[in-house]
Image (tube, rainbow, N blue to C red; front, side, top):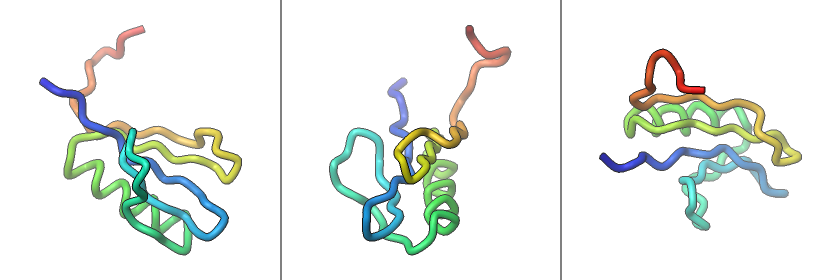
Length: 75
């Protein structure tokens, strides 16, 4: 089984973007972080992947997994 690539919500000086993990290509440009989160979450759900949201300073704000998580969590 291959690991699903996460969907990231990132900020550039111009806008908020949705970007697939490890891709330099930005997928979708949005005017608000809320709209970018909505789009990225739907993609992550459809792909069974993780959603990672960054603050403007690029620190991770939130993570939300939509894949097959182990329960109880490891660690």
